[in-house]
Image (tube, rainbow, N blue to C red; front, side):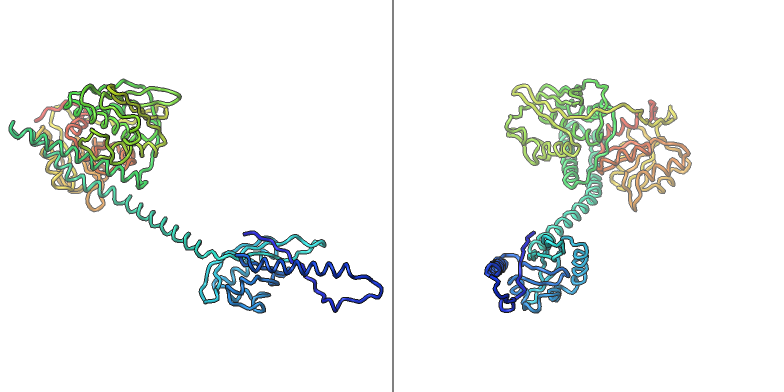
Length: 531
């Protein structure tokens, strides 16, 4: 509060004024009376003001404080004036306030300070003390300060509580960020083992048990989707995902997504088609692929007849990846609801987490991208995801030499015994030779002189070891760049790009065996003949 008060004092008493013979001093006496009335009026205002008002001389010594000071501190007028007001400051604040006020006097500049002031009941309260010099005298001399003191204890307490709450929220977010990768890995491990065992069982179940196996696999698929969506959404809400933008070919993203969703569309007898594209985009490729993949999955889920069309077109200096389906119609007044958590349209109950397209909306917001939706009764829906245009750049593709004409030799590192056993059996069932262990050193010991064609490792192993460590150790032992696949349950979007630096392919858990076999075939670059 910047308040300026000006007081004018008459230092001579009436009876001490010189009596000059024959001189009419009536005008002087009238002016003196006006000054006294003005001072009394000022004191009356000062004493009734909600803030404590004060005044000092050029040396900083107090010459006036309003009645509020005496009532607040319990000091007498004699004790408060001069430099006595410093006596009721908190001992820890006194030197700092004195130095700050002294520096302001030296520079004849405004003064403002928060400090603790002892109240009449002995309790220290926080106050804001502000003062500034009044206009200089006609002679140009510095007259001192006028100012105010306001109790700000409640304001300080509210600020402290807000800062404490903010700090606690930041700690909670940090803890959540640390928890999510570990939880993701641990929760996906048994699910991954179940998925592999279910696939292995296909060759051992008769026609009577086939329907039950199909239902088991469907349940596992729903559980995997639920877990992935919940973990991804939690990471977005925790602010644990940081975009890593770069250039990438749109065709590569769409090709991967179609290979993932073709089996499901085949089961529903739907057509899934993608228009070829030569465009390049620029954003976080991993997060963008998650957005489009979620939209495609949603389209397939809610389409029973017809199909899904995916394509990319240039418009308005941007690229737009569009997903068209012939599924259920989204009413215009319900469009916003599909991006809300745990909201499903009437008649659209199906297997899933109920999160709808909430991850799409949150990820798009994180990347600063627009998502458009339009839907027509009897025709289906269309989603368009904005994609800033990028430029082509030479890719770094792993080139490995695989010896043809024999069974592929696979080195497998997985510290979860169930997953390790399931993968070993699944790979051996299609003619692969497998050496498996729970760590890098153990794997090297099991391999001995054998040189594997491909290394497959879980990313998070026991005792702080990672799959990258296993890849390095195996390549060092063999003396060449062995093709590598890293399995992970982590949802960190930076992980694939970081692992790519080590020339390895990333597969997310729970594993899809067809996808794993496809990657092995691609890396081997040859038709192996089982021995």
